[in-house]
Length: 301
Image (cartoon, rainbow, N blue to C red):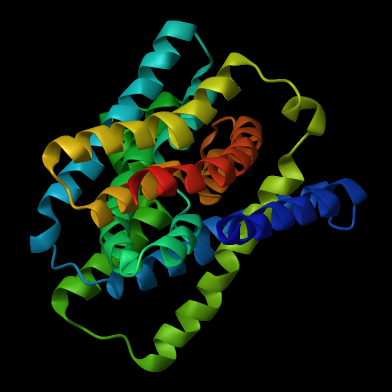
């Protein structure tokens, strides 16, 4: 029950964005600026701070890291296979790829706090490992699938100029150099970063259409299953075969059972993917995750 309540605020913030968008209190033409603010300032601040302050000594978590990256690669590959088999548009394929690999660390951390004594420390390893990997992979795929169908050179330039990739590089450089951010700088980044989740979720809500949400087409069905269902099953199976301890096994399941991250919607809008599909699927994933996470806890703990 406590886990369900930890997820409910996400739903409420999405609903608030929906209400602001539909009521016209924030005009439709203003949402583009709000999305750009999140993409270019709020989310990068969150990434710099999170990566710079995470303990990257992963000697104890080698197997955990290998299985995380293996399942991530499987999900991304499945998303691209679905694109080829179903003939969906390139814009839809970009969003389905993001929906399969991005994860809402806030939901996973809330679940870890409920179920695992040291779960937050383990998830910090996952955050440091996956945030740069996922962001680079998503930018590459979205650039390749985008309207311009960019070549390798254009993809490399797009990746190198992307605010999220730059933020990950700055965070890693700070972490590996041993430089500690001054308290005033860290506090300022924290103040900026705290707006990232709420702004992203409200932007999702503003982009939701209840009429589309009620239509469960194949794209929505596949995207919903990839993240909260297929991903956790893959991690639980591979993690068990690898012999991961129970805490790492459940922490990895949390990574893939959590819904997709809200920042994927902003990135889809910025890079020409199907942002409306992303918004609709992520809302379904939030609901399904709220149902699935307690079941996984009962099975693995």
